[in-house]
Length: 146
Length: 133
Image (cartoon, rainbow over all chains, first blue to last red; front, side):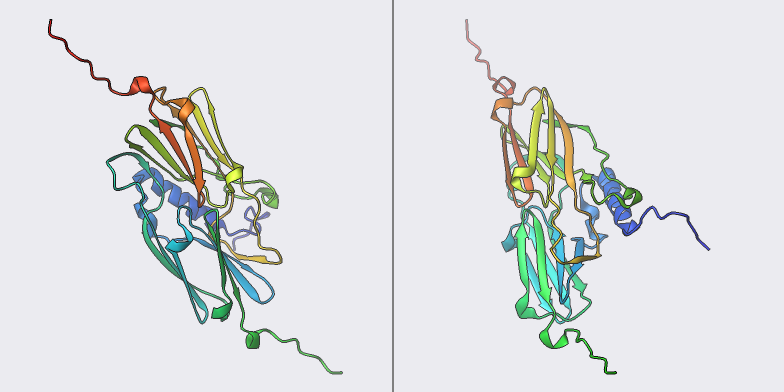
């Protein structure tokens, strides 16, 4: 049985850093950012509240018009495309690490969400989507009778 | 053109003794560097950094890009799952002296820092007229 006296990854997912390291390695070796299709892009973080859930994703360089969010039952899809404003000219590239091209990702949520009550904001390259649980599906407190 | 001086090895692999939440993790921002007309352009991805929290310093030939984030955990929420970690950004480049250091422009849009480094006048190719004697 695997047993360690202390947990160096207390409270955090150890694979977050592993994935990050992997992408850094990929970047080191190909320098072209083409290996992105391997992992799901964009990486997302989830936060949960009483009857709502918040999803955040880092999408630097996009504007809010480049991102399309759809919510259906208990799944959220984000898709978008990085537009290359500078690629139409004669350019000499020295480094190309930033993501480019199209992406699309679907994530299953832990509960159904009200499609009319989705609040999405995009600030400083970070997308924040807040979703509410439908009224009739909120967990109800049960009175215990003596 | 800009050469990278040192890759900032800023990725803390584990939060030490659970105290890592207070320490800002510094990441290496992904950059695009290209030459366009008479200038070198550096684009650096710094999502989550407000425009006022980005520092660009130039000391001699060393260009340092730093960005700090404010913790932006939604209020009243607890973390459910994480695929990426929030943190600041830092990266250092050395500039060749062919850059006109007084005309460097920096702007931020949607979490991307754009630096325009115009080539110095003396570095531009000059045509020398040949006179017939």
